[in-house]
Length: 441
Image (cartoon, rainbow, N blue to C red; front, side, top):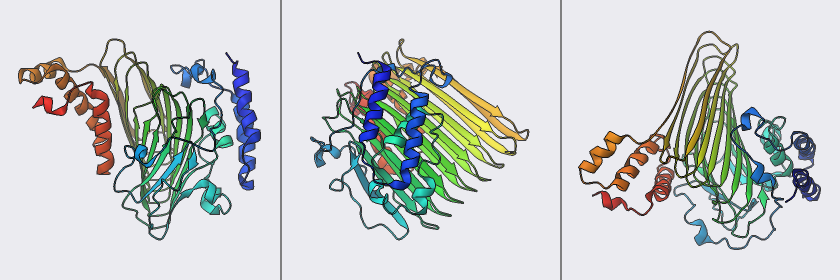
């Protein structure tokens, strides 16, 4: 079995062989790769990784995928596409595929494009924000992504433009992706008074071990509104490490929906910095795991300015021998008076062997604030189960009805109805275990 040093060296070898196209980005890449070498892979000795062991990921020398990804067809993508979107950008094994994408005529002031296509004429948004927000200094996976990413999605919304339908960014791993690694990147920048919704999906084949290391940066301009939905539905043997970092200007609104269903090991870091007075942020999350899956969410709401408000609602459903982690931190800076923050994490354990480690945190340095937080861990309500069974509903059907109701508290906040309906259907398929909805009638 290769040593960790050998695995790390393989990433450095890929770094030297990578394509170099954007001269302005090279200094950032060089510094990021140097920092990855200094940090190394995190271990359980670090507090932020105490309950998530990435050793299985570090035992495999994942390689960059072949330029030709076989086995992906239009029919394969049908289940992953979402209806009623303004544009669809499809990436197969990290590379933009225009043949699968749907870049309809977008209104003036809206740009949705491949990062590779934008590198040669980056403009102020790309150069001003790419790799400027997600932390390469303290997060080894962000540093590795910054050094290695070869493509991704760029979404720019000009001042005052309102895009009613979402932009869907779909990252697909090909069936022959075994033993490969990709580093997807997404950058969303909105101007003053603009509005946009972005859906980011990650899907892959079952029974295939691969590694996805994703980074998303979102910049909400003054008085703008950004809603971001991330669906992680990787294959059951995959590793998914993801970072979402939002930067909010004055009076902006950011809503994040994180839905994690797949992968053998999934880690999601979600950070929002409210850098402008009067900003509002909502973090809304659902994670469901079974078998031997492990899913970890680390969130940080950084109230850096006064009069900002945040809401955080995360719910987890764990079955089999699965394990989960939730660590949610609310930070209120010294000058962030009049902060209003609420955090809630609720977990449902469907088996005796499922486990969850939950740790809500408050770090308050101001004195005129209103902050609350809480976490619960429990099983299905026995009285509610009895009530349903007394009315002729079978045990499994009653169990799934109550579980779906628990999850719908989160899913109901997704404003794009086709996306919400698809999420509900995917969750139902994972919970069903042989029963059909009509069995409850």
